Image (cartoon, rainbow, N blue to C red):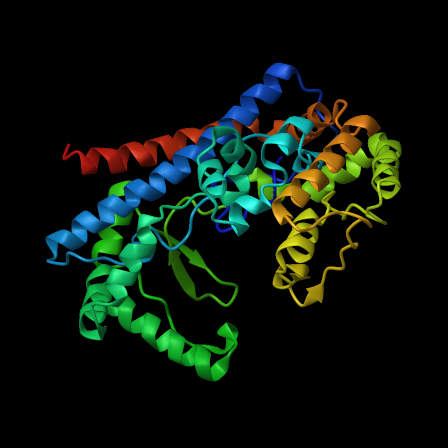
Length: 375
């Protein structure tokens, strides 16, 4: 079961346009190779974030600072976590998954021994990896420790990290934003990177990049922040192409849910079901999750007669019904294979760029590791 990952930062990949091109015939080997390459980009990008954090902290250590802001050291952004192509239907648990951990919401909403143990279970972690994304929990405590040092320390640290000129610019920009509200109305020229931030970029990436706005003003960024194929080709696009093949199976699945007392359900334009909202609102009492932005997500009521005295047991019962309906309706028959094939058809014209980006991330990671090891 997969859920949508939080898009904190796109995997770094320069991609040419795919729209309007004829589908490319792909082999199983093509699918395996491109999928693995994007998995590698995701994995290596996360390792690069951790290594960049180490490089930055070493520089700041040399400047006499022992407590750091970890968010600044890696740019306060982490890559999307990609573990492989998975259709929207994969978000519905299989029967085996439903019997083992249901939808997995109870693992988050309860602190029982069983929930704590499940949080370390390999099958559960594999099923929810993309949803959980990448993060180092120790950074939360480190950030709190940094904030506790007081303003004098944190300001001095930021100046050493950014360089005085860049620090003053950021302060002026924040003040201008508070009064103007529109970045386009702010007439400030961004200075280049400085301090340990510049040293970190030069160590890992080589040189920062300078870009130009339409009005001729310039800005600076570190390399490797271009969009990935996973953002260029949305899940909804592939799902839309699948729908012609699985419309009957979807109808059968939704009919199965209705027959079991779950009311009227529908797939979103991305192919998702509001199962998280359904479970957390009806079983765990969290109404905040029933909103997407400012719009409330309406979820069906629970089946008549469902015993909710034990919410966890009720979640398992519901998950098993959904899993059995997905299996009986044929929703799983070939859908993952078709989804992967359709995705790769759109990526094939860019396979050279994908493989080149994988190598580029490896090279950046090697630069950081060499510095850390003192080579």
